[in-house]
Length: 110
Image 1 (cartoon, rainbow, N blue to C red):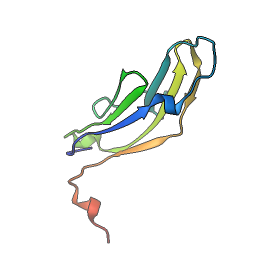
Image 2 (spheres, rainbow, N blue to C red):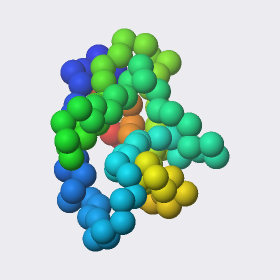
Image 3 (cartoon, rainbow, N blue to C red):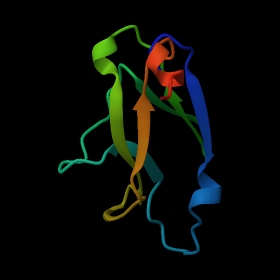
Image 4 (cartoon, rainbow, N blue to C red):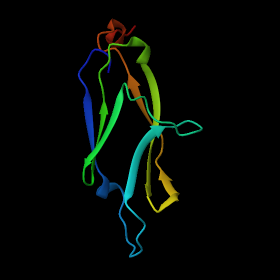
């Protein structure tokens, strides 16, 4: 958000993906990245992903005063195991609109 407080979205990783194998595939890796050709990292000036609590991820859409950061961000979630990165699962695209909450045009309709 531009000029508005940050918003946190919490994910319980175990409710998204379950493991039913006795093979040691390594540790689970969960990322959120841009949905572009290289699946590049998201803009860390706006977004943050905190995975410091086991099985819980906190995705933050931050606050900025940089109006150039406004716009549409097309993101995806990725999940894989550290010993098997080639078996990555990618979610459907989701879009985050970073808007100026003080823009008078947001509430004005013809």
